[in-house]
Image (tube, rainbow, N blue to C red):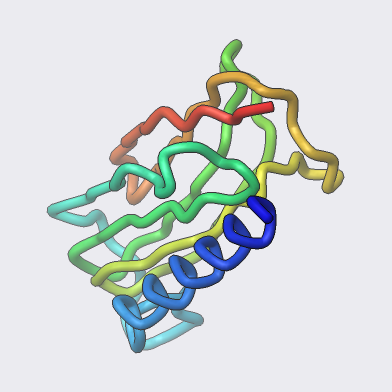
Length: 130
């Protein structure tokens, strides 16, 4: 049925995103070089366009940078931290399964993904359907 089809497409999207970011994804640990302030920071539109049941949040930094990715509710309150760490320059992606910090499914509504990379803040809107 429809649920199996959706699950298939989500897994396919995840696999494709991992292929696109192979060798670039993930936080870098420790030396060499301390994280700096990036010249270019880009938070792309999450896909699929709704977090039902999950969405990928792609982002890009042009140099070794400390990055945090948070999901906020409509009032601007933190819902969950998706990522925090030092990332090497390049494209990266994280997956949000539509859950809060405690692992509970969030209510339908409009959420904001906020990225802070070396002091540069970018946001994107991500609806969650019921």
